[in-house]
Image 1 (cartoon, rainbow, N blue to C red):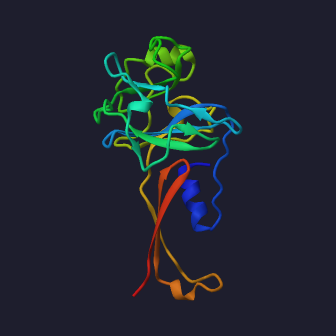
Image 2 (cartoon, rainbow, N blue to C red; image 1 turned 60 degrees about the vertical axis):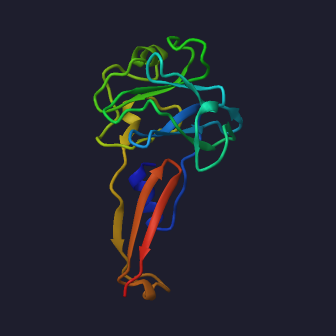
Length: 207
């Protein structure tokens, strides 16, 4: 399900979240201005403690998740389908590559990199590691400028084709064409996407 499809589904009153199809920890949202990164557990059965995972942009930018601020509460022990948003200060608005590692033992090892993305046409320092791991293709980038950027895959999907920037919110007039909706006729409903599992909606009542 794409983000736009999800938004339209909400308007129809039918919103079904895509299921977690792989036992993977992945980044699902990156905001280059707020420096926020959302990380999700795509496992259907296994809780994963990601406190020992590391973010890395380049040498000297290594930060363990347990040392980073968490946005909006929550913790780093992710149940199946759970996500957490952290602040990684080394993200830059001009474009870069960001890697998520299972530990801090060796940032040049393809065996240690869990996820990777890069944006705005800037090749990241760890691109070659992600390519060796089979999770990214060289000289490809998340779609769009500016971000934030969203991962649209199901957990096992890799590469720039599954990363894109957020669409503009969708606004539709309410016509009162369904039973019991006459009082809302002429009102406006706006729906936007915050992430793979989150949306927002604003209803402007006429009059």
